[in-house]
Image 1 (cartoon, helix red, strand yellow):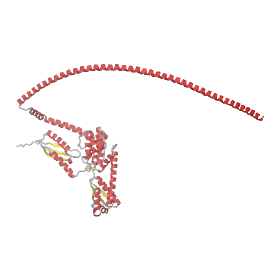
Image 2: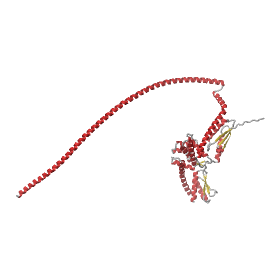
Image 3: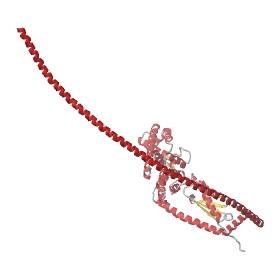
Image 4: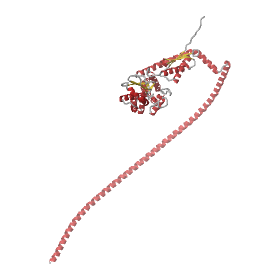
Length: 519
């Protein structure tokens, strides 16, 4: 019985468990089915949205395709219209060309007719000219037979008669024209030059060839000379100057034409005296230091001069070359001061005349730049200066004025003439240049010899320190017209062959004396 009850209990329990799990499974199944239905609903909705969007996109695509077709048709229609208009224009141009060709053919035909007519007329004219020439030749032959003279002889007689009859009037007229021109041009030139000179004020004293070095006492002279003169010999060898130790109290004289060497020697000697150690090795050291200082000074002098002149844009290397002119002289005149003076004068004269002031000033300032290196390069300083300025890219107008200021190149610009005038003014001012007696006498002799080289000269004298040459002519060989021509020829020859500062006046004198004896 107990086993039976056990079996029945198990059966009842199993049935309950099965019913429970069956009921729970049903609930879960319903939940899963509900969830699936929701997901299916969402999917169906999403598919409907996709179908709607697809239909909308297809509609828009069809509309765009339709619009594109319409635009394409419009483009094709416009292209056809343009083609039709282009054809019409081409047809019109073709018609115009045809009409122009017709006109040209007509003109060519007319020109050929005119050409033929001109050719015929030209031939007729040649025939007429030949006839006239024959008549003229016949007349000359007849005239030559009558007068027994050739054409050239008759022409010369006619010219001689005219010259004889109107000689005095021609001389007076020529002198009057020459006097008027000289008076007017002289007044204008003097006015321009005077105003230019008045605008500048500068010293014109020439540089000396000697420099005096002051000493603290005469006992230092022996140390400068050194044992057996080795100190002074070493000093002169290194500096390239002459050192004069004489009886002058408390001073030593340094002599030399090169300003750089004299300045280096002066500064070196002052340093040696101040230092007290004077021997060949120390002299070499001091001289080298002083040379380096002077090179730096050249750069400073160049920069200062360029700033004072107000010239901008020059290459730094060119400025250094300008500074070297501070230690260069020409007939005793300092070249840098002379260059600055010429620059100021050129600018002032250019302003008076109405030319380019900056070009005139720059060319005047740099006109002697070649003198800074003319001891290193062969050739005249004007042409050397031209090459230097070309190297550093200055304007052609400035280069030409520099190369032509000594008339080695013909003048092409008015600025070039101004530079030459300013150079002569600066060089010829009293005291500006120093000239040795031998050079001075040689210049006067050359001037007299040149004047005496012409025919018909009786005597020639160079006066006023070579500023005027007075020439006495033989009156029986040179007449009044010949005297005028002679003064002109001598002046041109002086300009061509002689070198001189300023200007030279050529004065030709002709004296006629009539002598008779009363008995």
